[in-house]
Length: 133
Image (cartoon, rainbow, N blue to C red; front, side, top):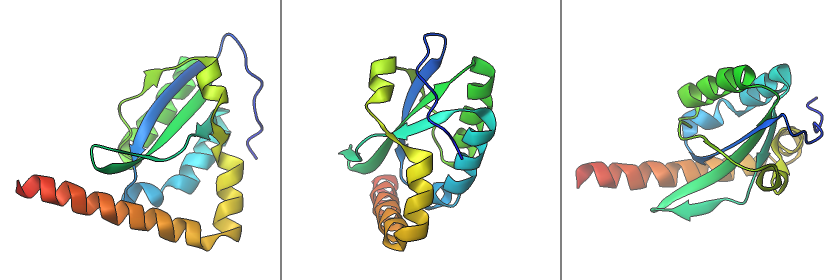
C-alpha cells in the first residue's frame, strides 16, 4: 500500500485537473498500482466545475522526473490528463491522499463510483453539445 512519503525538498510536485470520464474511471485502480510501483504519492483536491465540466484536481509528489514521466504518460493515455504543471510542496500537502482513500471507497462505498460515472456522463453531454455547435 502506498505510504505517505515525507515531504522532501528534492521531490517534484505537479498538478493537473482531470475532466472526469468513463474511460478514466476504468483505470483508477491501475493508476493507484502504478503510483505504488513508482513511489509516487497522489493527492486530490475538491472537485469543481470549470467551463461547464466537472473537474477533479490531482497533485503528485515524485522523487524524480523519470518516475513522473512514466506516471504522466500513463494518465495522459488512459485518463486524458495532459496539462501537468509544477506546484509547491505546500499546495501538494493541502490535498487528500488518493490511493488509500480510493481503495477504501471502492470497497465500502460502491455509490461513489456510481456518482463518478454520473459526472462522467454529464461531461460527455456537455462535450457532445459543444461539438454540435
